[in-house]
Amino acid sequence: MPVFLKEKRAALPTVIEVNCDADPKCPDGLHLDRGGVEHKRMGIVRLERRGDQLYADGRPISRYRSHKQRHGGTAGDKLRQELASKLTPNACILDALLANQHLIPDDWKEGSTYFWSTRFGNVVGESSYVFVECLFHHDGRYYADYKALNVEDWDENDFAAVLGNES
Image (cartoon, rainbow, N blue to C red; front, side):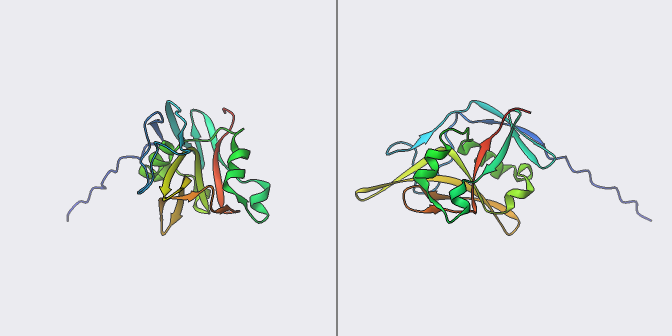
């Protein structure tokens, strides 16, 4: 009778390092070089999942919604002003999470999580637009998308990733 050995799978890492000084991957048609764009450099960041919580350099990453978002929505530019006092991760973290989806907390499957420290731009004719990129979950996987600050409302399904105090 044949003997079957269990195949050993390598454990997925719970800690990775991300170069948040690098330029993130630009979504198709967007740019990082003019017209209101910004990419805040954050150095080398250690991302770690402990239980169902994601940490960046020992700081928990949580999801934030403003009061106005919970009650009908708010303009992206107004939300940007509100988030100016908060520490938000950049799109390099988003890129790393797309490549390491096992690190994403389970409760992020609901809604979209935006990474506000990178803002991309696009110019169409005489108009310029600024966008923030997000992660969203669909059919068992996470994907990236983006939303225009100066065009679309941000509602209760649009969370901002924010860094808390060290733990």
